[in-house]
Length: 159
Image (cartoon, rainbow, N blue to C red):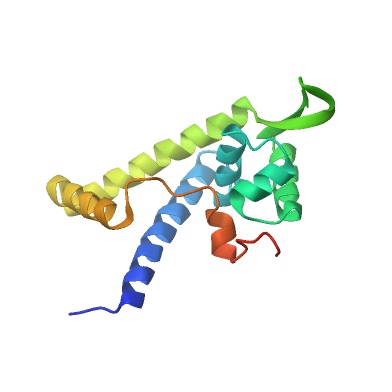
């Protein structure tokens, strides 16, 4: 049975959504009920150097106001803090806290477990082939941090 290109896109999106939803549910079971996918994107961008709302907005391709709201939630939950900038006392910079890094590591472990489940369903050889083919089609580079903005259609930062 031949599928359309739109069906392929929906299958890939369905796989992504299924993994993310399962990871979010598992993190909740492990005590992190307040973590959402955008929080992980934001913490990774902050850890990579996005140390202000403007920087985070650019990294995620979302409006500065949206980035500021995400930062407020992450601060409230103890995942990020604002620290004085050692180069400019007037400025505060964002830092991921040890709890934030713990959540990211736990999330990575959950995704590894979910990957193992998929591998068990298909068999090791077939799954390795599937992953290899997918990497050939989409490239081996990880998804960029701007995925939240891309999903929302806010690539120009105007939303």
